[in-house]
Length: 588
Image 1 (cartoon, rainbow, N blue to C red):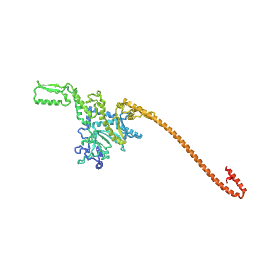
Image 2 (image 1 turned 90 degrees about the vertical axis):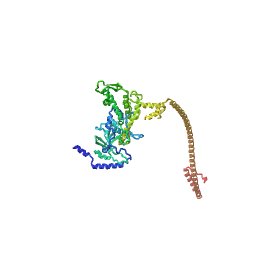
Image 3 (image 1 turned 180 degrees about the vertical axis):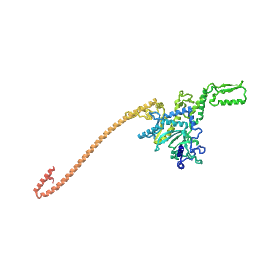
Image 4 (image 1 turned 30 degrees about the vertical axis):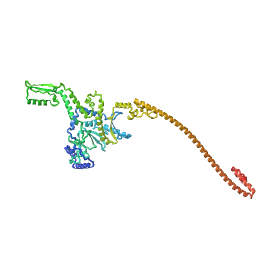
C-alpha cells in the first residue's frame, strides 16, 4: 500500500502537466529553430517523449563484445594511457593536467594562481569536498567515463550543484541508462508531432520545460536532468537523422570482425576439447543410391557444422563391403592461413580503434614482425598516439572545459600536459640536430625552453651562446666576428679622435667664453664707473649753482656790511670744511 501511495504522490497532477506544456510552448517560441529536420519525424521510436539509441546492436551487446580478450586489451591499454594523466605534473617534461588562463598572452596574478590551484584540486577529488559515498578520484572517474566512450561512444556524468546552484561534485553515470527528451526540430514542412514528455520525479517538476535527459532503469524513470545537470558527450557524432545526437561506437563497425575473432579462437581451442580428426576428403566405399548419399551428407553437415563441430567424429553402422576412406589435408592446426587470418582480424580491430598492434602486444600485420623484433616500433607507437590517443584526450579536455570549467570560472581552461610533447631524449636529439645544422643557437634554444638568458658581467648575452655549433658556419661566424672587432676598433679610434677634438673645442670654447665673460664684466664695471662719474659731476654742478646763488646773495649783503661779510665767509668756510670741501672765493 505504501508503494502505491508513494507512486501516487510522485505522479504529477493534471494542472501541473498543463502548466508544463504551456511553459514548454513558450520556450519553444523563444528559442530559434532551423527549418531542417534533425531527427526522423516518422520512423523514430519515441516512447513517452524520450528516445534511446536506435540501433540493432543494444548497449548490452556492445559491452559483451568489449569483453572479448582482443577488444579488452585495446580498451584497457587506452584506459591506462588516459589514467596516467590524472595527476598534476611534478617536473618539467612530466605528464598530467593543469588549469591555465584562457588568454595565453596574459600572465597570472597571485589571486588567479590560487584560483587555478583550487580548480585543479576540484578535478583531483572530483568535487570541492570528499564525499564518503562517492568513492571516485580523478583516476577512477576518468577510467569509468572513458570506458563507456570506447565501448558505447557516449559518456555521461552528473554535475551535482549545491543549494546555491553552484557545481560542487561530479558523478560518473552509466551511459546506457540515459535517454534524450524529444526537443529536436522535425522540419518546416512536416505535420508530425512528437509526444510530449511528462515529468515523473519531484525534481523534474521543478524544471518543467527544461528537462533534456532522463535515466531509465528497467523501463522506470529514476532521474531527470537539465542540460546543466548532466554531461552527454559522444566522440563520433553524425548527421544521420536516424541516429542524431548519438555516436557510432567502434564496436558497431567491428561486429563482423569480433565475430570472426570469437569463431577463430573457438575453432582453435576446440581442437583440444574435441576429436583430433584433421580436415580432409572422405571417400565412401560401396554402392549407395542418391537418397542415402543425400541423407549422409545432411547428417555429416549437421554433425560437423560450426566451430566446435570441425573436430567431431561421425559414428555410423556399416554393412559388409561398405566403408569410408579419409584423406587428410593437414596433420595439425598450425597453419599459416589460420594464423594470418587471426592477425588480420586483430590488425583491423586495432586500425578501427586507431591504435598500433605493438601497443597492445599483437604482431603488426604490415611489418610482419613482433613488438620486440621491429626496428621502427617506437615510431609506429608515436604515430598511433597522434592518430588515436591524442584525439581521445582532446575530446576529453573539450568536454571538461565546456561542461565543468565553464561552470566554475570561464576565465580558465583545462589542459593536458605531455600529450603532444615529445620524449625528452627525442627532444634533446632534435635540439642537437638543429644546433648542428646551424638552424638555431644556444641562446635561441634556451629561449624556446623558457630558460633564463646567460649574461656576462656587463649584462650582455654570453658570446658563446650566440655562436653556431656547425663547424662550417663557425668559420663564417668567426670571420664575421673579426670583421666586427676590426670595425669596432676603427670606430673606437675614430670615436677617441672625435672625443679629443671635442675636448679641444670645448676648452677653446671655455677659454673664449671666459674671455668674453671677463670683457663683459670689464664693460659692466666701466659703465658703472661712468655712471658714478656722471652722478658726481651732476652733483658738483648742482653744488656750484647753489654756491653761486649763495655767493650772489652774500655779495649783495657785503656791500651793506663788510664786516658782516667777512663773518659770513668765515662761517661758510667752516661749514664746508666740515664737509671736506675747500672754497676758493676767487671763483665767486
